[in-house]
Length: 600
Ligand SMILES: C[C@](O)(c1cnc(-c2ccc(S(=O)(=O)c3ccc(N)nc3)s2)c(Cl)c1)C(F)(F)F
Ligand SMILES: O=P(O)(O)OC[C@@H](O)[C@@H](O)[C@H](O)[C@@H](O)CO
Image (cartoon, rainbow, N blue to C red):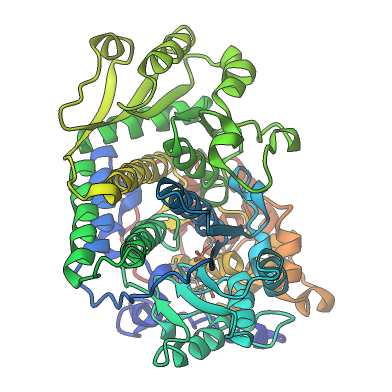
């Protein structure tokens, strides 16, 4: 198709049944691959879903030669953590954690964060700013004005965000000021290589320049291989967890080195082992996690899930809630997070954002005033706290919630020897209670406790939200099939999912994807020659673009007919399933008989 040069980086569809042989899977970026463990995620029941997600999370700890580096924080220097989407929210969480650690050592804060789309991305997903390398560089210059030595940590799990590429490029043009570090979960050879529109390099070219600096210790790439995501491409899950584990371990050790405690491989491994133990402690609650997932799926049919967290567990809850939008096309009202103290407690640089819109108030008071009056039995409320938090405050809030809905659950974190008061157990019937061993790692020990509880909570929430939406038919096999195409990565993902599900050629898939975006069967020359950014702009105002394209391809029907079929189906997955067995259709790749399993 004319203009296909734009898509030269997309891999051609192998012949039916030849996907493995054609080396298609091997050539895919790990962060975008389909994980064989979850090939039938969409046919699993809640407890099977928890096991599958647990096994995928366990792959993070598989033996790999993690090339951790040892560097000392420059005295008085600045450490900038930057990312898009989930990676940006983690940058905020990490910067706050280590500024708190410095405060405890009576030292000035030295960490700051950058997130694409600005602080509003904390509460409202902004997926398109990740495509702009110029803004990335400008934001970094703004934060580093007048600074002489900066450690820059760019986080992009897929090694793909142009926003981060722009920042790394700026660092490498001023190595006298910056020490650039790239964190991600793909080998450099699988870094994204399609051209960044309006810019001079691809992400991979930037990553290769950085790789060349590794020998001279002028730049570093930390890219542990953690295996494919349980939901293909959903780097908020294992990618986010691996990023948190890696950077917390590295920065904790850097601070030890700062206080001239010798850094040993043993000490690094000891900290990594505590995270592995956190995986075991967390998933020892699998039965209750499955019950929470089931309840969440039921509530999301007609109601909402409200996550009320204490301390940084509240920020972890907000992050999980926000990510349901770009991942499962959830409405911002469907899953919402709230944190004690609101914006004061998350210490974001732009301060209180409550006035930006109805989704922006995030304090418990906001929940009680704006949301609780309309809570009903169709809604579920999840409280997340530790036994060091104000238990009587928690009990009071739980009692208020109970007046409105009996669907109240909680995740509680205790240290060995702490027990939930009976009054609280009576108020909240179902409790996912984690008990953590006491750690004798002196000052850092309290931080490792905090990090473990945050990660444990993230695992549970990622599992519960992903599983709940899978149960609601938003996932086909292990692919997200209903996301809004709001940036270039999601455009390529939509095209790739089309190829995988229909087995049709890259050209045909791209053609129908554009028909679905523009709602027209015949594409004008002007449309064909638009940039991918142009297509993303047109797609951002459309919903169900990918499901409509899938049905149109499977049934070989016009997008108008496909759209009416999708709109009248019980779920997205049902619309796809019923289109797979259309008589006389060219068999797609690696398709089972398609009729087995549950109908969702
Ligand atoms: C797994 C799967 O084949 C698939 C999904 N997404 C993709 C992609 C999603 C996004 C891209 S991309 O933006 O071009 C990209 C993103 C990251 C990276 N390192 N390289 C390329 S490819 C691919 Cl290549 C395959 C399936 F089945 F989902 F389609
Ligand atoms: O960290 P990456 O690979 O650059 O991805 C950055 C963002 O696209 C990503 O975090 C996205 O918001 C999430 O919905 C992924 O599950």
